Each structure stands twice: as structure tokens, then as C-alpha cells.
Amino acid sequence: MTIIERIVQIMNDKHLNQSDLCKFLGIKDSTFSTWKVRKTDPPAKYLLLICEYLNISIDYLLGREQQPQTSTTTTNNNNNNNHSQFDETTLQVAEEFRKLDFKDKIQVMSLIAELSEKKGA
Image (tube, rainbow, N blue to C red):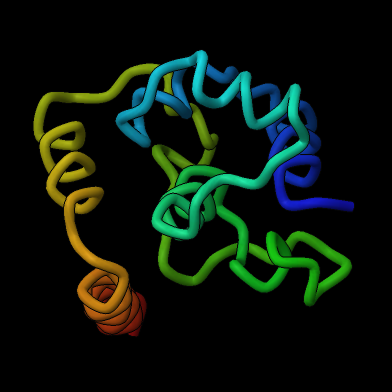
């Protein structure tokens, strides 16, 4: 199964719509549609964001795991994965995160994981 096929399958399983994911990624719906139709995978710069949105591990998305493990770097909105309503702050943070290069995104995700662990401890 390709990356885009996994994304579509998880979105279907979680009843998530394409428009909300595209808003989260800062892309047009037509861009995502093109990935689906052509069966091409999203550029690497979107993979971590997609994992965050879908609340899955990057290993599952890349096919290194067979079960969609929950990502340790994401948080659920009231534990229901409902991303259809974003507040302005969330959209601004997502936009700034999207602008970071891959190395900086990894650092941010590591900091979020550390904060989550401290909060849960």
C-alpha cells in the first residue's frame, strides 16, 4: 500500500474529510486530489503534519508498521479527532510550522513530545 493510499484509508476509517486536511496542510484541495488520482505520495515536507492530523505514527504512514499506532507527538481535540473547527491560533501555529524546514520540524515535534510527557507525569 502506498503512502497516499494509507492516508486515504485512515481518513475514511476516521470519517475525516479532505478539505479539513488540506486547510491544516495549507494546500488546495486540488493538490490532494491530484495525489490521489495520480497515486503519487505527498512531498516529504507534509508527512509529519499529515501524521499529526491523522494521529498516527510516521512508521505506519511509511509502511514500517502494519498497525496504525497513535502518534506520541499529537494531541486530540477532546479525544475525538474532530479537526473540522480550527481556532485562529491553531491555524496560525500550523501555518508557521508548515514553513519550517524538516530539521526544525523534528525539533519542534521533539519539544512537544517532551512537554506531553511532563504534562502526563
